Length: 210
Ligand SMILES: Cc1cc2nc3c(=O)[nH]c(=O)nc-3n(C[C@H](O)[C@H](O)[C@H](O)COP(=O)(O)O)c2cc1C
Image (cartoon, rainbow, N blue to C red; front, top):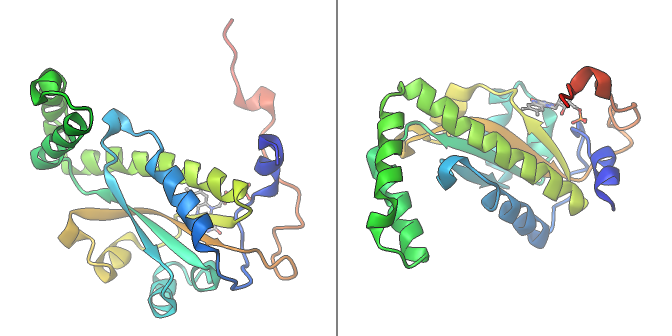
């Protein structure tokens, strides 16, 4: 499908048929997440992949009882770093320089400036910054899912603290940001699939300065 057709085919699925998504398709979606850009390349998040039905059932009441949680094949939890520690930043630059076969001193100026700017932010600001990187990866995942013919629902309708506690995210220095349900639509029961897509008019959305 051409990009424009994919954009119209995909929608925030409300009802799944319970079928499993093939592992190769899941892998493609995860690779899109892995290759999404992020600020300074830090990729300040982890993605937790849940296919276990019991765990999804435990999560559902924490997610406004949304049926996509249990009907989905896989549920991805984008969990942002709860803070940018010097250890995390330094480890990234060590990793990056080792892959590129560069001496660590090459990035010292930039690394120190990042340590300085993140050090000047509150923990909440650091989490918000990391969380924004999750949303970029979410966008990549949504498009990759559509390209693979997999339906998806981005989801913010959940109790962040309760999900954190269930998955023991704070113990891992993580804080849940956004969810992504994956599966195959049940076109018979999904009320949204038949409705026209609503988007603001181009003239209302774009401001062109020439
Ligand atoms: C960040 C984000 C959070 C969302 N949270 C939910 C959610 O909790 N449950 C849900 O059914 N849809 C959720 N949606 C879906 C949006 O309502 C939907 O994407 C929007 O209305 C546009 O419709 P479309 O995706 O079908 O084109 C969310 C979408 C985004 C991007």
